[in-house]
Length: 615
Image 1 (cartoon, rainbow, N blue to C red):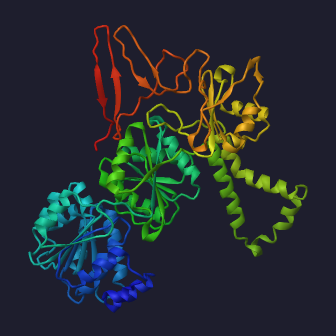
Image 2 (cartoon, rainbow, N blue to C red; image 1 turned 60 degrees about the vertical axis):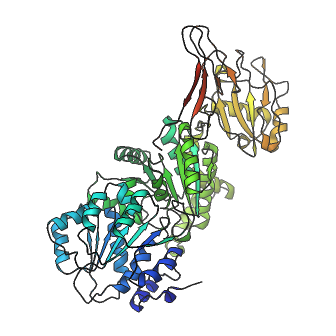
């Protein structure tokens, strides 16, 4: 494996990165550093977020800049204040053993007079956001005619944010004889235009495919109804007790609303968006970097400067409007060779966008079932047990308290102490989720939960009309069958019937337990919905409600002789003649097809509707 020493970096730089713990270069660093050290070529480098692009251009820059001179020799442009400050700090770390190095950050939201004062001292490297750089140039407080190197970091995002005019203005003030280094995670047409206009026969280096997502990220998505989006977010946070994640929202208003709701519900969260002052943003980022926040809710723009290690999850509260932003978002996790999870919360209209993302990023997106209350309680229980097991005991400090503790607990057995200790925290989740409803919506919009491996879907001829709810239904079924509640992790109570899931291994015993069983004088019917993966057949007549409708959600037709319409849909209605939620899929881009027919002055034809979104 190649080492940094083999790339040609200067000794002060090698000493600095050695102290930082850098040993071997990432693929993008290994490819670009030798070329950049020549100091003679323009370069376009494409690599996913989190692959070490800052060090890729920062390390050779440290070896090329003459820090004995006071003139400005390098200009680095970045899209956001946070990224600007992050790059500046990284460069200062790389220049730790460089005598006379002065690296100045220039960005909005801070005193421009202080920044001008720092520039007057003689900054060899200026790191700036485009808007503030234009202001500095207009005030004639910086001389860019001596520039040797211009670096455009996150070039695609600068263009997405509308900085094209500012970039043109800044680059036009720099000398023709310079080297331009363009680093980007994606390669839209606008970035290609800049490379052609301001670069001379650039060398293009690509690590991974263009627009391709990080290899170490697992991409999953949950399908739910719009009204349940926030509830799904809370379940994700509860299902991953050790989450250290970023939650992305589309707008500043939504970002603040979601963050406020999480804080109100007791989660360790905060917001980051453009309406916050620089002091507020700095405070939030400090808390996030110190891991005193578990979840940071942010807009795409505000999060572009976030370079925080060990982020475990990226959650897309809504999918971004621009496809490229998904790559930038998900790239916040799985940095430096680690693994991470990217979770998208979508509604039934957005599955077409998932297919588009799969095609462009060349990654498989797995649809997952939203964690049930039982699954969350189980996860929280064993996480608590693990914390108890791994807790370090300060023997010296606790010793004087133990005799009184032992005396207080002397009448309890070992098993009782364990149960009560675990229950202190576990009971909170148990109480909250004991009547939790299923939040999954299926792809066709029917709201029907997808079948999953290891479980069997059953139809039960009892419902809310029998004065049963989710909890009392589960209690009745487990008591009658003589089985533990854990074998029935999911219950969905309808008006006149219900659906449940039972573990495959107890399927036959469970069915047999209800032969010749009556509830309030009426026979109880429990029939299989079938699960092809488990090899369990579907009961042909399952799912019929007491009103004659197909409660199991099979295909049905609705008709009217008075200008109505006829369609084929999958639904979960309680009786025939009523309405059904959802419709059959027509294509893989979120569209649906419905056949309409009218005999009472209406019309006949086929209409095709495409899903929402701007892709």
